[in-house]
Length: 288
Image 1 (cartoon, rainbow, N blue to C red):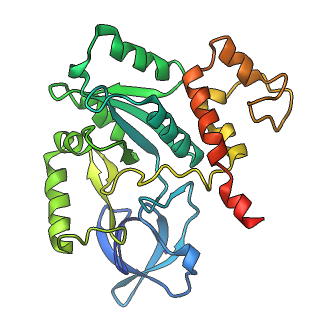
Image 2 (cartoon, helix red, strand yellow):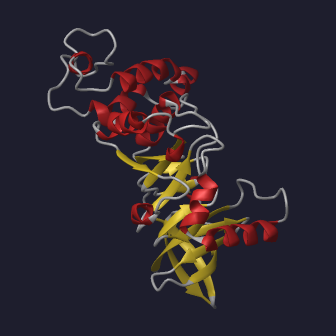
């Protein structure tokens, strides 16, 4: 059997990218159980029988998203404008928490930097996140996109961020073919039919970008708080808290709270963590 990557699914047709970079239409074998059905981004084992490509097995995933339905994502670029709409630390941090929880690297991209109201406005935001270890990039309509092309190279990427921040225009500036490809797919599917049944990875800047980028909701109900606090980059410290199951809220001897007071951990990120904590673990409560 050979290994391939699923880059598009329409109904029951799976487009596989082979090791030789060819695209082949395949079908999934009936022996695959429902929870093993391939999604875009999956690495699969397939074989050829009578000229037909048959998916025999889905290889283990490193992560999995429901909206968009995609697996093995390397990074999520959080696109947030400096102005119009105004930059939101709350939204950015919640997105950081959600993608980090899925073990996807969050990358912050600040757009519309030419609309800065003061010289230090942009610098303060960049410093806020870069000092905590996050990768931060900036973009304006007139700026170069070469750095962003390097960010996308050899990665599977999803984009997220509120409407109006410039996600689509950014992708189209990176590669004019991207808009043409997505338009062709939309026409083939018919207006109004570009739904969650169709997910596709498009080649862009020597990487792959999901055509339905972003998360449709900021739902923390299925997030386990104990796992979340282990995966927030800001909380990765050498010195442990006094208690192994410390929630970083009211416990004495909490190294995280102390670091916040000393300015070694972002107070903004910590306070946003406290805000989402009551929203977590809801699925577990329903199961009780």
